[in-house]
Length: 310
Image (tube, rainbow, N blue to C red):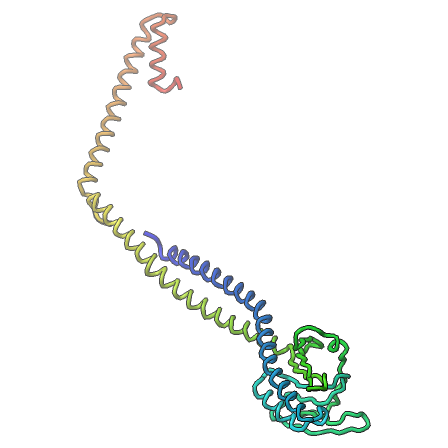
């Protein structure tokens, strides 16, 4: 019969092996998911802001058709407010002229509010700042002017992604650029959120799997094995004519006793015959001469039977 401690060690080893395999597979899956998640999420954000930026850019270009100057564009804050409401990750919306001089800048805030700052000295007419009064820095437009690829152009500078769209007016050509930007920390936050969720799922999966494996081992392996061992043991003792713990009085044990008695009687008879043969050989050994051949044969047989010739 298998002991309970042996059963527990066997079941514990199986559970440990299964949990280790599950943990390793989940960890590998999480690692591969994190590697691909950042790239996929970045493409998703870029596609999203590409659609929103094109829509805002189209509205600005439609307004320029009616003769509105870009540097004194009224109502820009209302257009950008709708954009911020549809883009939680968006950090800043900027508009600057073809030479890189900033015209408008809208930053992320709880409530979209803007104030106009007109500075004739710096020739930054129509500048609109949001939430903070920090001066806007000029942009470098050299690479933008020579760019021939599809718009928007995506740039990564100082930990921020920038999507740049050209603003063109009918019969006037390029009037400026629209820029949408968001921090790389948005991607990092989503990535670590994925890691935390994966760890939580991993712990829950390991716990549930461990419980399920323990129950399966207990009811599908250990219990049937114990029952089978008991049935085999009962059948064995039934065949022998005795149950475990009973007196050895069955027919099989009686037959075994008879065989043992016959063997003891045979051994006793063999010992008596051997002793008698030795006595006869000793008496015959003294009769012939010492150098006679029959005497040597008799002596050899005597030594063999007495064990001296080994």
